[in-house]
Image 1 (cartoon, one colour):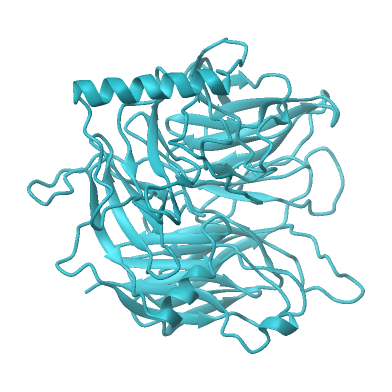
Image 2 (image 1 turned 90 degrees about the vertical axis):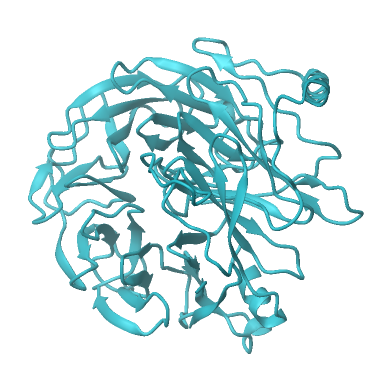
Length: 509
């Protein structure tokens, strides 16, 4: 879902100008961006009114996206702990140790192992035609649920009682049937360690063959799965059908859903040469649209970054040019379907990413505090060698770039993972000779608090570095940090003798 490059910037990134609702999509020229960025920098230096986070010491930040959801949480209380905005607390000793490392399974072809979750007791991960739970601290196997075929897609969300949804193949691949259909939707109870239910569903407009789904999500007690044949929804607890896939007389269908605090859909109409996309907020019980926003022409695919508030990303006119799937963000009023503001996000400046065709597969960003937190692309730092970047924020009402940033520090790269109340949890990808860090960024001041620093021992850091930030599932919760694969493939002769891992896990005391 991501093929990415990091162009080097010879100066601090120039930040694009936001577009008010209804503007034609024009961006500042590069020269004008440089002038504006320089002017802003001078004002900040003279006025001293904005405090930037220090780039020194062990500060740095990242937030959830994951591979894992980019949804905002509610503000939490907590006084005097230095993290008043969230639940994650800095331990007395931030130095982590390896909790466990799970070997990569041996496969004969590219195999999907998408899906990972952290419950109150377990780390749960998709394997080869199975879902397995491991003790969060030791990695010992707690339970395993075998599946008839490979996992194709998994919800990033889970219910309060630790249920989640998956889509999987109806059978294992054979020589006669190399690509079984991903037509089974199911719910895993991660407390009981069992598959609660699974089923296929036929189209409402005819045919008795179960249709294929590309994505699945969860919102409240509704499981919603979408694909090119339309979308379907089920009750979380028993799998009862709430609505079935159908393609309207106008050729429109539900391409995919996004869940979390609310439920939204990207609905596709028109032809493949001239598609028209509509983003709708839905009643999760009936599927009835609560509001609709029509995406501008030139948008072949759209991704929903957040459902509450409703934020959409798209590559308008294929102008991003870097495979990120993002040229602009759209802040939408979910109650009325009206565009609040359109925010240009020049792909040469910002490093958030969305799956090219998936509706709910954005990462390296976070939404909370009525703000969109994104990382800048890597650029030259102050040291002779190595690059760095920052996390900045856009106001979702005005579209303006806010006056503040979290600096990664020389040779580190900062990536938002998720919200923690009003704070941003972020991962600092390390230089070759260090271990990675997890930080909490104050959503208002951008002050960073170190939560975890991984070991710098060569074998440990090399294992961590093998999991690229763009192509891995990254989770942090309660002083535990997990990086895992989404895909595994047949080993090449060059890595036949190397230790390859499905998961690497770390913990603090």
